[in-house]
Image (cartoon, rainbow, N blue to C red; front, side, top):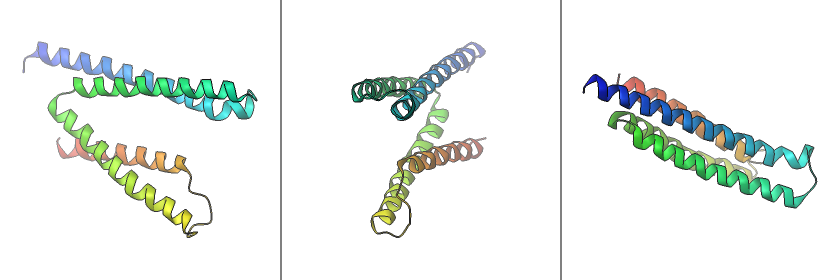
Length: 137
């Protein structure tokens, strides 16, 4: 691979990563607004619905940015990302449903909260990325 191609790949990856980070940050901000706005800022179902719809729209933008990011990666980077995503999805589904079932069967005292599953999926994804990068060094 020539230096010019490597430079353009690095630049494209950097641009796509920044774009994805901006969309992810915007999604996070709209999620915080949707969750905490009705508690602290407004008492209107209509406003809450609009903010939730904005959150969903920004989430779709984040998904498109993620797809663009994946499309811009080289084959090895894409494989590492997709392997980490597959691990996070599979473990999230299996462990998340196990966690929910423990709540339904009253094995755990507290209610199963989706936020714990989301955090678990994020941690598993990061671990998958780290393991994948280390595996292919």
